[in-house]
Image (tube, rainbow, N blue to C red; front, side, top):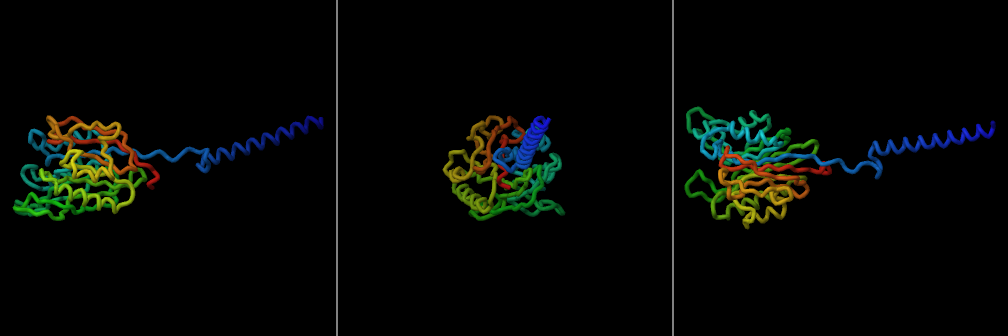
Length: 296
């Protein structure tokens, strides 16, 4: 009997120790406090779209914002960089505030960064404004309309000068901060102004720590010399695995790739594509991205 009781006590002691060890392991794994625990949390995902909306007109030059909103809605983006946005500009867009209209229609927040703010052309009307806008499904925590070098299209004999129209927003994507920039570079054949604009943009973006995205209409091909400094610091989603590399302009028979989504090296690129549409004279660019949580 003594032998049996001793054996039983020894068994219970071993069993209790085993339970204690299991409890420790469960606690460690549950709290992430051991190398045995899961690795770093998975990155957050984000869908970004860039779209030159041609002041609301399609390839057919018919003004139809709903047609363009449907194109955006079909892609289900989290962030949209729009270019050529009219706000009370003229009869060509029925004097609509296109930035606010798009935000309301799509259920998104908006920040509009006008290039031009001009007096109204009708008595009692608000100022006429034109430029890029950024839509976001996430709250916009901060925003700024930066100045870069521009050659005005609204005055005779313009000279290059600093002017607004380079909007930036700060959002938090499921806990991860992100800076988003939208741009529309000079359209002229001479690359001098675009070269200055690229330098200005990079100087502004380099002031901000953390992950960044730059999207927009660059009015230049990927191999254009004036864009080369961008590729030292940003990745073009269309040149990465999963990127389609398709042209974006003109929308009916695209021959040029001048519309972009680009991202800082710490942002992962899952894929990029160009939807087929003639709702504007440009086709949009869409990209699926990942942002590591270590940027918190």
